[in-house]
Length: 114
Image 1: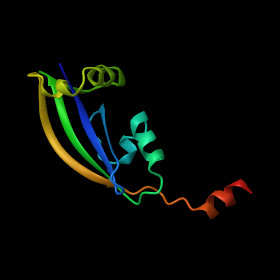
Image 2: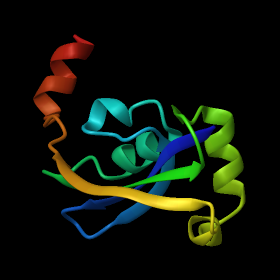
Image 3: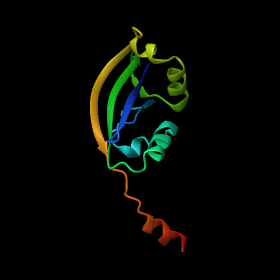
Image 4: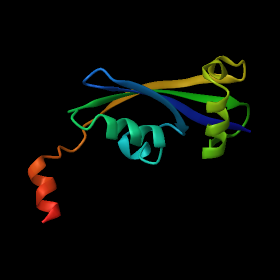
């Protein structure tokens, strides 16, 4: 059995960056919405027009591939960056996509409060 997970590096157009491990191979922002680091990064960079996500997808182990669950991802995260260089961890693919956060204007916020 092997598991698939990804390292995602987020870069906002203001230069801020963050990295996280997540399950599977994300293809868009909807695949990242449940991850706390993603949520915090997006809330810390509300004024950005775009965020680039660079995805490195890995397979850990041999045999049939399953998507890593949140507990496995937490264990991999706890092992640190060196874990990605473990002999049983293999880079499967690399990709990227751009996230365009919704523009929230002060007027939109005021309209919701009234």
